[in-house]
Image (tube, rainbow, N blue to C red; front, top):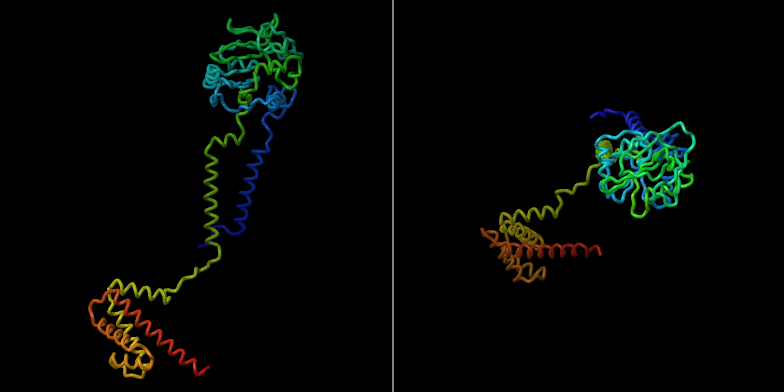
Length: 396
């Protein structure tokens, strides 16, 4: 059967496949991060002045269990009472299911640290917030209410919101001034929301301002037994290509394709490789012939036939060796063997007599057959050995 592809085509096809695989790997691992450039929001990937990579790395150095969260809030799993969700200046809107997931996260005891006007669209019962982007300098806001958030941070610095006020009496202003609030906190179920009017205290440039670092750490809490989820999902980072592939059956498909590919290679090598004929054991092997013949006699219970063959062969060898007529009597053969070969005349005579009787008998037991054949074979072997010794004496 002719091949569909010649050697040159096969090499070209294999080379193209290898190049495609290299390009896929390179695009997955060597492509720049989505937020590597200048950021207009505090992304934990950005090292720019208004990014938040430094606070993220600081939490790691302080042994917080912190990780970037690039999945939908509907994927939350674990114990919310031990989790802190950071919504640092979210820029994308949320679906109703995602808003409900955040509410459920809070009701079960989770803490949300949110900042910026985008967060007001994600949080339940959040006071409307308008940020001022025209002011170039931050404003210092003193603490106006005793709270664990103000430990080591009597004042903080951020860009001031525009006339921001609590929405209800259950919402408390922790930092602010006469014109606007800066930090508002309130409860939702068992959980707590710490809502910042601006993201400056957790940016690379703003965290160095007086009071901002302790305020940032107070908002998150103690590092012991706390899991911090730094949201990047609402910044547009919906997971890497690899994280998406892991959640699909594509990996199993690649494994199956690899198995099929190896099977094709194996079958191709078997078809195109050198042909070798396996060695075969001859069916004419003497031992196999003897075993087959013995099984045949045993299954047919033809003991008399086996005895007849051994009996006739022994008579032929003895008459030839002793110089007797082929139709000599068994008694004469036994007498001559006793004189010429020094055999026991009575034993050889009894063996020949029993064998002659068995050849004419219709039923001979397997035990008697085996005994007679073994005895006659023994006599034939002794006779053959004597003949060999006789031939070797003259040459010596």
